Length: 488
Image (cartoon, rainbow, N blue to C red; front, top):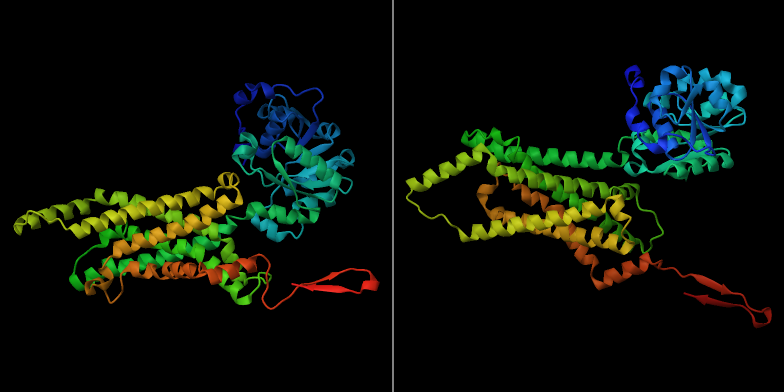
């Protein structure tokens, strides 16, 4: 916006106080930038910090010079183009035509297109911004790069953002030059092929957490189901049959009852597709056949489902800590104390309930702690520091331990309540009995796969063995000795 254009993202005082931005080395490679927006300013700062000599082309150098580091030269566009071989085009697509007057000076130079279309523009135009720029300047070499990097990442440094920079162009030499430039700036260039891939590269910033969409919808659907189920049992049933208004439970109590159900079911759904995949391989007797698309997608979303499970479990722990703070809880304690006095009871200690609650809470803490390890090791910085065996142990073995602990936590909470007739409100079973269905199936199936007869066969299949097949190897020998064939 115009207001943002008048204010630099990095303060001038901060830029000038950095000695590395004061003056570029005399022999530093020269890079040009066409544009004076936020991204152009951040790009100029990062290039200067990386040891490049930067020339910024502006239609009004006097007005915009104060927005850039003092080490960067802000000149007219023609001067910037004349003195640079690599030029960043940091303007919007609709302004590309305004640069056509520079065509003679741009001939033979590398243009780096950093623009991103809006979602509407991406659907409207069949060609990418980079391809459109290449059509306008046929005598130049266009490279698509840096469009997935934000202005903030350029300012703060690649350590604070995604380091990968997808690069595509029809000229390998131009890609090499821009890749070296990106590497010098601290980023990791990724070759995406020809300029035809630019449309795919430009679509990346338009995606809003694409790998989280299905898991988020799944988690939300489960929460709505369990919330409605608990509302019917804990709020609607007392109101209809007993005339008691317990609608105060909706903001906290019913939410806290629903969250562990969602977390528990999601955790079991992390390990269910692996069991289905193993069963499918055992039935087929080979690993060389593709899984169905739904199962393949399910396997790819396990990380996101697991993190959402941890999120719901952490919220459940926080909500549980808040339960004793409620005014309603205090009223219940006072009412219980008055009732105890009126009935002349001095001791309400029930040993079984005490032990059950202690074990229940302890198992819950252990399950949440184990689930925390899974969440932490899912972070790329932590996962990259582990070898495959360590990562597999945490995600597979400890993950299954977390599922078992969660099951014991749920069973201890239920105790004998599943067999009490009063717990079946509106003839609906207690919520914890529903949550136990999928996890118990997963645990039992996992136990079956650990049987030697199945585990050995599955191990052989995953090492390349196939059922009812033989691999023939022909050994070339002298014709006088004949031909020998070996069968496995």
